[in-house]
Image (cartoon, rainbow, N blue to C red; front, side, top):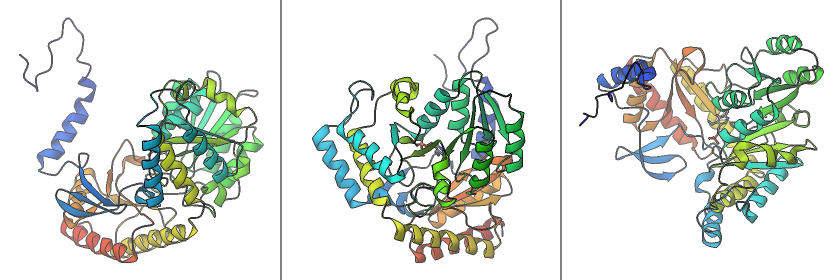
Length: 412
Ligand code: PMP
C-alpha cells in the first residue's frame, strides 16, 4: 500500500507526470513552513453581504472580490433567481443548441443587447469560455492574433486553441501595437485583442488610439471588458463607451462573475454574420448551458445596472479615497491615480506579501494576494477591489487596518 506522500512506482523510464510541478510544490511548502496561513485556501464560512463575510470564525471586510456593483445580494436579483429555480428547475442538462435554450437565456441575451445597444449577444457558461470560444473560432490557422502581453489567461488559451499565429506587444504600448500590425503579411486575417481594465494593476488601456490604429491597418478588434462592465462609462458599458469608440469595436467580451454578481460570460457584436457563431463555436456548443436561476439573476442584474449611475459615482469615490489614503500612508501602488475599482498594492516579495496578507486578515480585512505567473513583471501584489456597497466609513476603517498591518510587517 502506497503512503500518501510516496509517488507511484513507474515502469521503465517514464517520468512521473507530476514532476513538472516540483518547483511549485517546493515553493508552496517553503511558504507554509514559515507558519503562515495558506493564502490560496481561505474559506468563506458565511457571507453576510457583498462587503462582509465570516472567515476563520471572524467577521471580515471583503476587499478582494469582483463584486464591484454589489449585486450579489440585490433583493430583485435574488427573487428572480428563486422564481426561476421554482419555475424551471435546477439545471438545463443540455447544450444551448439542443435542449439547453430556455426562455431565460433569450431574455438574458435581450438584456445584453439592450445594455450595449448592439445587434447580437451570445451567452456562454463562463467568461473564460467566451474568450476561449470567440477567439479560437474567429482566428484559426494562418490568421494572426495581436494581443497585449499582459492579457488574461483565457485570451492566451483562445489563441492556442484556434492555432492562430500569436503576436504579443508591450503592455498598453500604442507604438508597439502599430509596429506589430505593420509587420503582419499582407492579406492575412488579423484580430487585435485588448482589455478595457487590466485586472492585476487596475490600469486602463488607451483604447481610443489603439482602435484607430487597428482600423487603419484593417484589423478586427475584440475588447474584454470583464473589469469595466457595469462601472466605467456613462451607462456602465465599459472603457469602450468611456473613450467613445464602442461603435468601432467588432466584439466585446464580458462576464457575469464580476459586476453582474453571478456566473457566466458573453460576447456582443454588430457583425452581420455573428449568429453563425452559435453553430461553429465549440466552447458554446459542447457544454451545458447556464442554469435557469443563473440567467434569471444575470438578466435582472444587467437591467438594474443600466440605471446604476448613483452606485457608479459612489464606487468612484471609494476607489479614489482608498488610492489617496494608501498613497499617503506610504504604500507603493500599481497606478499613479485610481483608474478603476482595482487598487494594487505592490509588495517587495512573495514572503512579505503573504505576511502582510495574513496580518490584514487578522485585522479583519480580506484582499487578494496575487503572484506570478498571474502578475506582470514577477510582481507580488495585494490587490484591493472596491465595491459600490462599501461605505465611506468602511473605506476609512480599511485604511487604519492597512496602517497597523503595514507598520507591524515593516512595509511602511
Ligand atoms: N477576462 C478577464 C480579463 C478576467 O479577469 C476574467 C476572470 N478573472 C475572465 C475573462 C474570465 O471570467 P469568468 O470568471 O467569467 O470565467
